[in-house]
Length: 181
Image 1 (cartoon, helix red, strand yellow):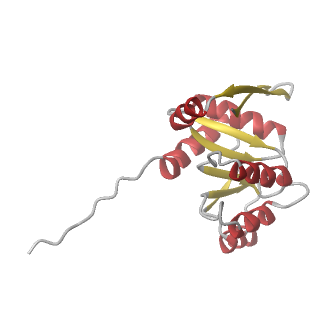
Image 2 (cartoon, rainbow, N blue to C red):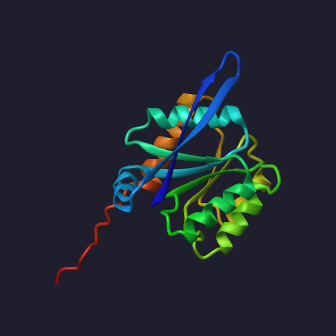
C-alpha cells in the first residue's frame, strides 16, 4: 500500500481567512501510477498562508491539471523530498521555492537540493517578493533554474503556473536536423 496525499484550501481575501486540510487515501501501486501520470506535480515551499491559498486557487484554475503539494517549512520540505526518495515515490516535476523562509533560507534549501544526487536535476524556481540583484545572482550561482517575482494576485499566479507548466512540465518535442548529401 502507498499513501497518496491531497489537499485544498479556502481563502477569503476580505477577511484574510483561510483553511487548509489534508486527505489521506490508501491506493494500490497501479492506481497511484495512473493518478500520478495524469497530474503534473509541483512542490511549493512557502510559509505565508495567503500565498499558499492563492497558489491553491490558481492551481485549481489551471488546465491541464496541476497537483500542488505545499510544504510551509524549509526543513520539512527537505524531509518530504527525502522520504519520497527513500520509498521510491515520484518526486515533483518542479519546485517553487520561496527565498525568505524560517529555519533555513530558500538559498540554503537550494544548495542542499543541488548537492543531493536524487534532486540535483529537478527544476527549481526561486521566487520572492523582493528581487534584489544579489539574491538573483546568488540563486543562479547556487543552481536555480529561474528566479521570478511573486505574483500579486490569483490571476498572475495562474499565469505564472501556466507558463512554468508549459516550459518545465510539458514533454518537449525535439526535432533533429539531419544533413543530406
